[in-house]
Length: 432
Image (cartoon, rainbow, N blue to C red; front, side, top):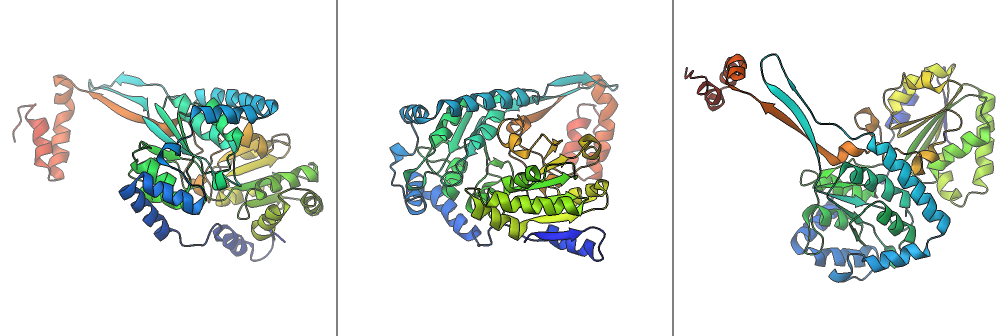
């Protein structure tokens, strides 16, 4: 059974803290293995990538077959159901429209000292998109990673997607074409991250790598950070639902299971103020689990990592939400805006009874790549700015330098950096 807590019970604070701090995810020590793979790819390039793909994905490739060509993409798209392609097109339209609103503007201004200051934005030159394959084959992840990059104006978008046993979801390729992906490589794991970061004879290096993956992908992204940028270290998916008794318990139950079915290490949390409603949700969860195709995964997630927290009033949920800092927050209550305004740490908020988290995964518009593992305390969901660089602009004429230069000289000498001081002083004809 999931953990059940009462915020009014003695010892709640300690029990809640233990729950928040409890580890989730793979326990295996993968860092050493990932370091070996990265070193091998750096040294042997394509040969190492091909060897790792044969070993881990059971696919034998040549350098010529690492990249998926246009003809194969055409054949894959032809296999897709028309309604699925239409749904992709609808999602593309909405995701692009949302992210166009994130595009920043360049600006400049003149200050009172006579300097002209400003900033400008430029897109990254090349980005690598990692998309899970095999059991976790998600066309939606292609759109949510690639479309913000395309809107930002990234010059080259390369995608890596593993094809275990040679299997690849055709809709993933169709999504990549619609999202403007320039190159697709049939590789995954740490070897794909290393190839994108360092480059091989076949796979040109990129400047940033984004997208979720397993523990090996996460460890590889951590190890190549600095050589390239990364979005975040993705952990298991999370949802926190705040609900009152006016909800249909079956709706709330399936919302909780919508994240639990992702992975056995996913986490679903319910905060409610009514014991009868909580009991009804638990019954509805059992009914749903009897029918879900991924019931075994969802059940394991719910029973090992799920939680129900009973509060006296729903306003008490705010402090708990911020402590958990969930990836997804559903406010299935009468006046969700009131509670939402008080929450600080969350990846995405779904407002009202008719805004299930699942619409955010596919069609709402914002990217579903969101901070997990309490990273919402300091990180945001993937967006256009993640694929752009901000540059400061500083223009200073002689008169302006005369006004602010003396302070710069004083500060430079206070730090013991005489060359810094002289670079200003010589222009002011002040050598001492």
